[in-house]
Length: 252
Image 1 (cartoon, rainbow, N blue to C red):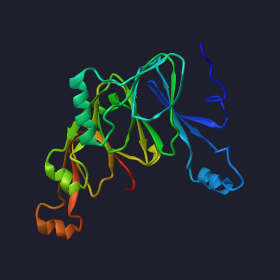
Image 2 (tube, rainbow, N blue to C red; image 1 turned 135 degrees about the vertical axis):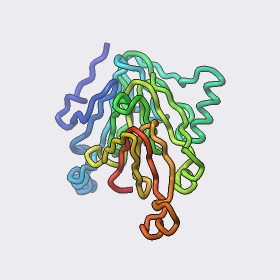
Image 3 (cartoon, one colour; image 1 turned 90 degrees about the vertical axis):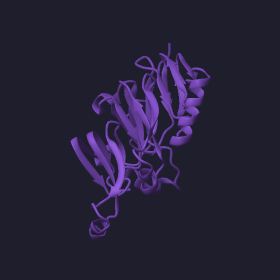
Image 4 (cartoon, rainbow, N blue to C red; image 1 turned 45 degrees about the horizontal axis):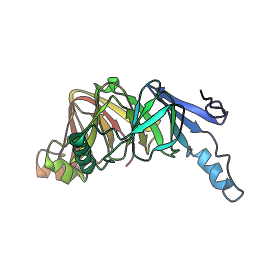
């Protein structure tokens, strides 16, 4: 039996969002400041630069974390590698290599409470039921997810998508029914959500941070011909085609 006080019941902590096993909280002010750092802390508060944390209630679901994300845990919490045999280890090692994510993501089971390291990034909680059961994440976006979700390396539709798009050939895809926790450089209030129904989205630059796995992602010329591309002044664009959703950042 355990009891946690002066945490989510603290007036300085605001609950941002709750989905599944995850609760995202935000510290309204940095109270542990010195005279030398007070001015910086004041302007950080004014500009929405604040510490945020994720609380995981394992009684609702076991969770999988990005390696090194755990800060403290209370109660019945057990950590495992999540590796189920040699074949599973090799598969995760290969997926980690090609996506740039950590090869081994620890899984936490039990019915206790797990708290992640504070971050100044913004926390996004997404229920995959709102994404048709699958989502593809931009590099570095994954923070945690419910452990029943499956991870896979999603290859771009063609090699030119990686070479011309200036990114890797693979992204991390997550499928199933559950909640994904992401850390973003942009708050949800600024993210643009575009829903496609058998249609197409063309973006000049790597502004998409997440998209439905049902969408075909390629890199193409902005115009049908080289002259058309030159006339538009854009050159190559990222193209998302089909039915699904895309989250766009306002700047890159």
